[in-house]
Length: 296
View (cartoon, rainbow, N blue to C red):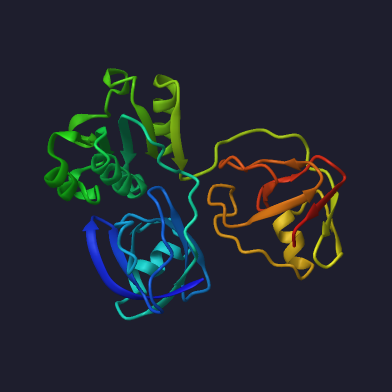
């Protein structure tokens, strides 16, 4: 974890605040567009937020947080209690949504899904690529960074306050561009129905059906401890209850904070990230083999 000082809290849209975090012990870890960090809140909750500042600035991170009326305590705490000067810990950046080199990009953002797209658009333009942003939200007042994006990038940016203009027609957009999309499930589904390939980051996991949960055992390679994982318990919880706690955030397989290395066995991947070879996300994934050896 990295220690930071909350430098600024700015309202950037209805129910959205931007937090600027300054490194408290020197430069912060580098990051690339699409990355996110875990923010450890003083109320003992950890939440994941996309970095939306400047990757070229090693002195600070910027995130944006929408106040969710159904908050489980994360966004509510940020909006009601966080003030400049507070010391906060953030993780090293992780990136499951990297920007790949391309001559042309189409960025699709819905609401708070604009946050990972902001540095992507900046990087694409700086690289000399053709880039278009289609940004939808309920109203202009509810769309963070809309005014500054329009002022900076002009005709590259197309704003769709849906209460006035309706939803954008993706079928009328360029099929040749690399498509990057972050937003609600309905936007991702609409994009995937039109474009042959979509780089997507999801707010919530895709609804999928898996086989019945079965028991398996986990061997902790570092200590040799064997832990039984029953059908009605997650791998993450079994490790925690056995005294081998793993850092976690979303507990839904979309953030990647509970990633573990697999030494032996066949994981049953149930995440929405796409676990790389030799990795497993303990919050949702299980095992296809009776025994799983983890680097724990």
